[in-house]
Image (cartoon, rainbow, N blue to C red; front, side, top):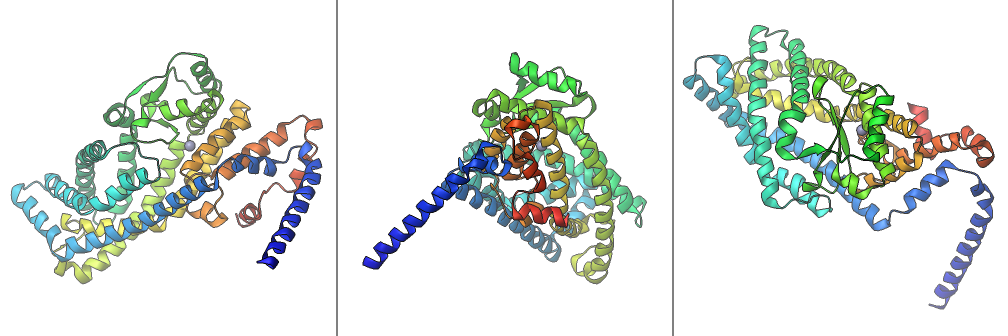
Length: 446
Ligand SMILES: [Zn+2]
């Protein structure tokens, strides 16, 4: 114990000396160091909260893997047990028009897979959200919303399947080309209808209260070429504690909305920064750019699916009761191939989104000229995003920049905009614009 005690004293001395050295290095703190400023922001998050978020995010990754496994197992069962073929037979018996058969096959498929997938839906959508302090719903209201989503899914997905198989029948060899166009058309329709028909089912969107804050937000929109005359406020606290906002709709239905958590938990400057970010998504045409990427991605995905489907059905089609690609009974196979494709391409989708998010972040900081307001709200996202994940995780698994990346971006902006006499380290930091060794690696490899 004695040696342990003196060991502690040596350690204490070492820490004391280190603190002194750190303090004397404080000459640098008179200027403005973006990395130091970023770390100061991050230091306000307690280790317990950080560990809680890390566990939440890691659980999310596990759920993604479980989802893929579930999709593959269910598809395998529906084919091997002959259920899918039975539903196809039933649809053919009930109606002769093949287009309409989709409206019998698809609802059965969706209801059965929803029942089998319910435990995972409950775990990811209800249990985990509440366990980590994000979800605010009780089981009843959560379950009602799940049923409403299923109801919307039955209509939209049945329509989609009916048109997809129509295209397949019209062009059995080239359906994958037209299929990509069909997906984008459906996406555009859903976006158009979202603010008018779908979102009001789950939440109340009302005009934001008049006042200086609303005026500021509308002013940023006007100054940047977005013609909106209103900002909506949504009662998101009904479902979650998360702070967020969004831009949705298309053409005439476009609108920007902020959630009540944002209003209740953030300073007016923070709200303004978030809304400038949403305006940035609109002004930078992110919706249209995303749809353009999706056309190309779905083209590749459907082409691969078409090839894989053919070769698998050639071998196993008879056992599964699947006649060919134009047969509704083969849908679980098509879905399983799509599930693998989207799982494998997740890092690519994440990067596409993250690039847009970073652009909207910079837009917001430039439009508001208030990097600290951006840092304030970026820090709040640490309730559901890892503060400073390793570079590989940020690159491949994150669809939004981490709080560290966002705050650092704001602090670099701040350093570059400080009056020269206030920021003697600006030049110094220009020589090493990448903050951590992690980020250095990003820049080198990108
Ligand atoms: Zn965004």
